[in-house]
Length: 167
Length: 98
Image (tube, rainbow over the protein chains, first blue to last red):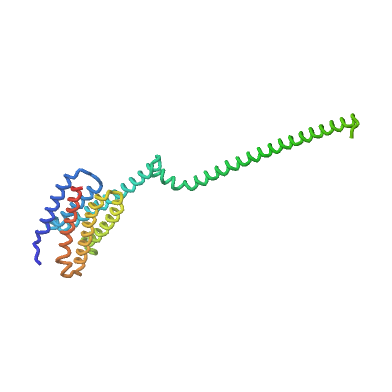
């Protein structure tokens, strides 16, 4: 297969031109559009190969260094953006954060609620016990008074019998 | 030119190219996780292009070491050199459509 030495550079130039035109029409300017521009510049290496071999190698090295640098910046920007998003998530009472917090603290909160309920019930039981004790005291007092009254009635009855001389 | 006498400059450039491409691909592959699905596909095409360039550099390197077979010397280098720009072009078109 005999390929013309000018075919590859010509194709590269066409691809580069079309790519740059399309890229200039793209509205978004992000890290990866910079990356795309650098990648398209790499297409020009075969063209410069015709002019000078070492010029082509220099261009290849420079463009690849640029691509590596952009990709590193892109990686760092993504990392920092994610960290910022996480910070925002934890700074404000974001629904996701609230859900996560609920998920984390719900069992603990359930236990705390149950403990509070048990304490409340225990307090109620103590209250009832106290009331029962008071009632018991009251009943004992009542019982004592009734006994005293009965004794008083008995004494009065006995005195009356002694007075009347009846058996 | 001490370097030229011991190790030829093209060999250094090609090895450096492969390493830089691998470095770039690693960082881009991590960074693209934060993009939308459409953008991930666009960046995917550029990663394919970079991978093809790495293969092209490897083929060229083998050629420089005089280990070339017919496939490597006549087809591989040219195919990779054409396919990589085509992948970049597809990426640009996808970016334009997105």
